[in-house]
Amino acid sequence: MNKKKDLGFFLTAWIALLLLSNAANGQLKPCYSAKVDKYGFVDNHGKMVVEPKYDLAWPFREGMAPVRIHGKYGFVNEAGKEAIAPQFDMALKFSDGLAVVKTGGKYGFIDKSGNLVVPALYDRADNFHGDRANVSTNGQWSVMIYNGKQQKP
Image (cartoon, rainbow, N blue to C red):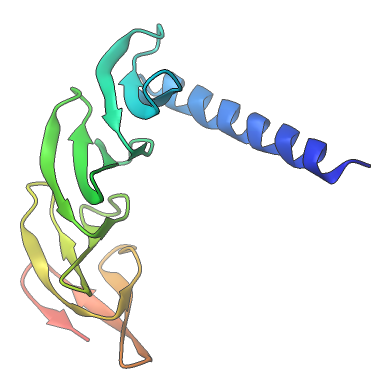
């Protein structure tokens, strides 16, 4: 068996399923343009809604899609508008209304308006699931509980 061929088939099938699942949801989909070596977003009919200008783009989650341009991460909303300007060193998809971001070498969490609602104090952080997220400081992992105002590392 040719492992490269099998891997290529698997990746192609995975990307097709991902795009089909987004199409079923009526969401824009990331689309790579080899012509300009950038990503944009297309609608369900393949029409380019957001012109390719991003170095990387991910599928939508909770109405927002992470994008990277000039080494900084931000978010595009489902209307194709840049909802949160690229300003972070790293960003993950939204989960339970918050997204992990890295700024100044530390991780924190933003809301959908781009407000840093959990300060960037952590060496590592995972997405929230419900009101809890795993965070790490000095190699020690703990569970943070977030209720909109209070954090308990």
